[in-house]
Image 1 (cartoon, rainbow, N blue to C red):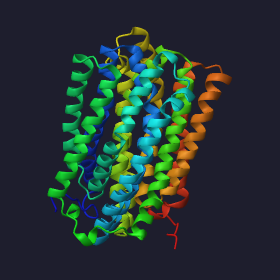
Image 2: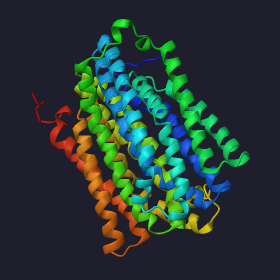
Image 3: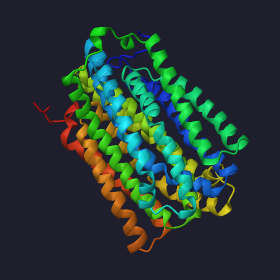
Image 4: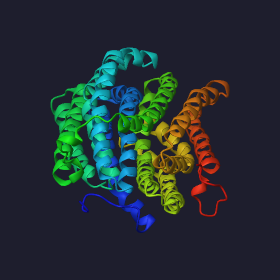
Length: 453
């Protein structure tokens, strides 16, 4: 068991966070390869219009993925706290009950997304010349939503137990299969948008099945006995209590992204293609922060469950240090190499110019973006999932209002879209930090704030 779990309640804080985050980072990058491979292959072998069609569906797909994955993340927090408290029976119960929920939620949202795809795309003012392709792509992704959600559920459970390596292995395999199938369906068979979507769904299905079988073989917590396979109202309530606010937070962010996409679509296919390319790049930029936040969440969850609050504070402080180093490196990369990176997706010079300009603006706000993930990781690790929902509401309000103000009322046009993204990150970062400082600074050994009773 020791080879496939990690007890983070003892040992060096930085070592735990970094060694846990690195496999997750590599895994998340490979997961992004699914969408990046689609974008590069579709953009180069089908055309800029096809790339715009894929990009116009990204916020809708994120909405349904996020609503499902938030439940799995909530279950992961419960598992990490029980594991830190050395309550093995409750660890198994949390894994089982989260699994029951994750078999129902993706089916519901997958059917909803499949049926409502045309309405969502029209609501976003999707250009008419790419609407048909966009409907095909999003419907295929919704049909495979269950597979994506099951894999992410298994990955959340394994990471909560300190195993960030196992999910990585199957993501690498799945990403390789995805790229191969992309080339076969899109390049060789000329299946276009439909082929790219099929490649993603098939590869995700294989990752889910392989990860589940392997987890059962290597991790004793997944070898359930008959008595473990019981629905517990208490455990399910705890999972939903954390998972629903996290789902709503991600869902609200997705809805707000759809509002931004609606404004983007109004500037035509060329700008949509540029925005899609930069959006794919920034999905990669988010990954170091995402994995850092997940590592901090697991670390803080285990130590909070063990009531080692000084180590929780250490995770908060060291997390900021690690985030600052990552942020500075990424800022410099986008400032000097943004154009070259955008050129990996398309050959159109105007699209590359617009994309590189956007990356130079948004990269200036990467440090506030990192603050969001670090503080959110600490808060969710301590079970404060409702702040994640509140922070999501703040981000939604910002995404609905700031881009509109900057593009329409301040006359900034396309530039306002890039600037507004950074301003929203800044506002969310300040909100998150204030929540920690005003309500949870009692974990700081030097703070005079007392732990709430």
